[in-house]
Length: 169
Image (cartoon, rainbow, N blue to C red; front, side, top):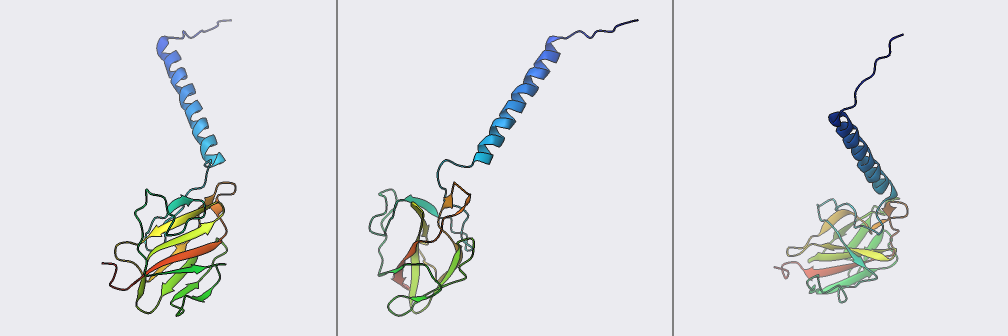
């Protein structure tokens, strides 16, 4: 009986070492992504492409962090609780299409535009900053992502910072 042995060289050991390191890194990344982030994240942009910024706590346009330049609103409209319908002194804001995924759409009538929208949910909020031009409609706004289940937090309330159309330029 003849036994054949294969000599292990440094290059073979190096290849196996590189494979083990690669496998370890791949496993670590898979575990990190499966576990999700340690805190909430803002989530996807709105339909108009506006990327929200996560803001801790229960912010208002008067209490935003110093890192966010101040908003000058002609009118602030708070919708609490968030339900479909028309809101504001002149029913100038309409909220619609509240989804089971906790997203919603809005339109603004009259001579107003939103330069900012704060969407509160859970222990955090999302700020949609439409400056300098403002916007009269957008879709798929939401609160930040809940890291416990990777879905958007439920909608608590929404604040709209409105300017008279043309006064924001």
